[in-house]
Structure formats: structure tokens, C-alpha cells
Image (tube, rainbow, N blue to C red; front, side):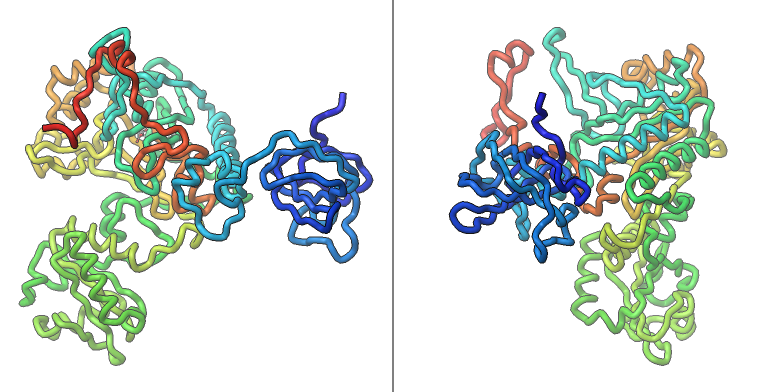
Length: 582
Ligand code: ASP
């Protein structure tokens, strides 16, 4: 039996000289040399090989062909050291066209950016390019390293359903109407959260899954409607053990891709992260840390600084590099982010400060500010004064604006952020909003505070932790509540009545009555990890078939309308589209 293919194109080397081979792939480039001689670069997923064809063939770009011939050295002077196969070529070629191709909608080796909609419309052509081939191979390497690591740590892969009841991860659900139960809907899982907890009650001990999660949220560079998570849960384990399991899995993935284990992660409490970096996902690849100045301005005459909190960033050398226009632009940005203004001071040669606000500051304040911020001549000091939470948020954004390096620079810096608050804010009706999800265990010292109300509840810390890589939130996890009494107290604090809790999560509360082990877990986004390892700013570059920013798929045209007959079967009637309504 003769094989269709004996070798991959990109793997032929000088060792193969003299062998008769058959390679298959796409015509990558073609150079005619007179009537009856052409050089064809044939491409498959491993690379390209030059084939010398000396019969007449009408071969065009992206034709799918099988070429059989003999591997031979390239003639002297034509060796191409840039190519892995550059020492050899295939001669005496017989060419068989397996599939003709229309001219591709965009050149595969385009030097200019091809419009993303066109790339997605013809994703199957786009996938042939080097970038996606490399990124998807890298993704597979990450997945398999994670699986191996989790298995070595005695986790069992368990699949959970896609048609579920709503899971409270804080996003909007995608819903699926039920034909057999008209008027009822399944939700697609925002995560396997409840099921993995049920697995723990079910004695499965350590669960993991590379799980598809679906959330109907606005899309961004680091967000898609559907995304993959390494999802894990462990019984009789607490926060430290879970962080260690996940650190190990991530390190294994990085090692599989880069050949080296990353540096050990650093640990930081949420409060520290917010105070020093103005963000719960601190990018520690660069400095520009926030400096606390509230005390320095205590009793100040300057009105702008008579507020709850003053903090600043020392932009090293910024006085020299930033002109007035650039500073005005930064001020405008800060205002867009909600600041009343940006206070700034240039540090002069003798260390004195120059800025519009100095005239309102005492000499003492002026003398203290520079040293407090480690100022040197030529620096630019940027200050925000407001409520503490606002100051942190705005300076956090300003810090990124001034210093954030591209994804490919600065190495890999993992940070575990711990002790998140249990509630992230208070809504219009005075009810707290869960920072993670309502199954998160409060900090042992703060359980008593759950009886409080309003702003007081914001002080309740939780046993939740995030893993951050270079300023991207990779994922979150927590110790779970396994006691019905604490769970009810959290539901109550969230404004979920006992009745509502029973309706929505009764099955979980029920399960906890039948012997629930203490358990904790975590989930992190594989797309984000892969993007960073691939040096991509956008997760769409590491997903085979992503949606556009507006959630559409230009390839299959989804979302698509459905036929009336189908709607009838589901018991659904459509309202007129919003634009036509009224
Ligand atoms: N289910 C959570 C999430 O998707 C992660 C976890 O708590 O394990 O964010």
C-alpha cells in the first residue's frame, strides 16, 4: 500500500537526501523559471519545503497538492539558512492536484494587518497562517501540561452538564428554551461552580475540568462569550493548598511552553494591592507604585488636599519627558476616570517643587513632599486627592497609562491576591453585591460582622483569592461555605430571602445537610494564560473560532434567526425588534 504522505514538509533535512518521499499540503509560494521550470514552496503545519517542478502545471496559491520526488541537496549558493528545510529540496517531482483553490481572500503572508472581520469570515484560511498555527499548538501544549499536572496531584477529570439551572457568577446567563417544558429555560453554565461543589459532597475529593464557561457580558480584548477555564475543587483543603495546586499547574504549563518554570508567585493582600498598585490585579513588572500622602497633608490649607485620601505617583524623569500638553492630556484622562483634577509638580534641579498648587501649600508640606515620594531632580509628581477608593482606582489607571509594558516584555510575574472583601459594593437599594460568588466563606475573624448593614458590610473580608499574571486577572477561587447556617447568613446579607434561597439554591443547601466536607477551589482562564504566553494582547488570537467584539460570528453568521415553526415548537413568540417597537 502506498501512503498518501511519507513525510511532513517542514521536517525534511540533509539526512533525508536520496530518499523518495511524498509530501502533501498547500502551495505557499510559486516562482516560475521559464516555460517548464517552477519552484513550489509546499506548506503544511510543520513548515515549507521547496519542490522543483519541471513539467508544466497550472498550480496556484493555496492549491492542495501531493508532490512525490527525491530529496536532494540544494545547488551551491542557494541554501537558505533561515529555513529549517533550507539545505534540501525535492527534485524529479510528480505533482497531483488534490484540490483546486480560488485565490485566497487575503494573502497569508500579508505584511499589513488584514481586517479582523475578513479574517474571521474566512477563518479556515486564516488558520493556515503561521501565527494561528503556532498559537493553537501552544494552546494544546498548555492544556496537556495542565491535565498532566492536575492528574499528578490526584485530581480526577469530571464533566459537568451544559444545560443547567442558573449559576450565580455575577454575569448575565445565556438561556436555552425547553421544547419539552414550554415556558421553561435552561441556563448555559457561567461556570461549573455548583456542580463541582456537589462533586465534593459526592466524595469525589479532587475534581478538575478544562471547562467551557458562558457569560453574556460585553466583550473586550480579554473576554469572549465562551471561554475555557481550568476549573478545580478540593475537599479537606484550604486556601493555601488550593493556591499550591494551581501554582503547580500553571508552572507546569509555563514550563511546557518556555522550557523553564516561572519564578514563584508573590503574595499580596487585596488591601495592599489596592493601596500600592491601585488595582486588584497588580502588574508588578514595573514600579510607579502609589505613595500614601494623606498624613503629610493633614491640617493643610490647600482645599484640594482637605479630603479623605491623598496619594501620588512619582513619574521618574517625567518632568523632562512630558511637556505641558502631555500633562494636560493625562489630566483629561484622570477626569474621564472620575477625578476632579490632577495635581502635579515638577522637581527642579535643587529639589524644589514647581506646580500651580505650591502657593497653597505650607513650606513644610513643600519640603516634605519630594522626600516622601523619593523625588529627584527631573521627576514629575502626580497626585490625586479624593475619597480613598476613587484615589486608588484613578491612580491605578494612571499608573498603567504611564508604565504598562507590552505583553511580550518584562517576563512572567504571578501574584496571588488574598483576603478580598466579601462584598464589592452596595447597590442603589443599599444591598451589598458579592465580590466573588455567594458560596464564598467569610474570613474567620469577620463572620460576626455579617449581621451589620450598609457600608459596614464592606469591611467583611473573605477567604477568596485571585491569581494575577502581568496585570491580567487569570482567575479566582475561594474557600466555600459548607455550613448551612453561614450560607444562610451570607444569603441574608445579600438580600436573598430564605424562600428565594430555597427556590434558587435549595438543592445545594439540601446537599449540605447530607454530609459536606470542607472544600475550596479555583478556576483560571486558559485563553488569557495562553495569550500571554503567546505574546498576544487579544485572546481572539489564541481561539480557533472566536466571536467578534460584538459577539457575532462572521463565518457561520450566528446568531441567526429561527423559523416560526421552530419558535412554535418552543412555545415562543418574538416581540418586534426594539427599533421598530412603539
Ligand atoms: N466559579 C468561579 C469563577 O468562575 C471560580 C471558583 O470560585 O472556583 O470565577
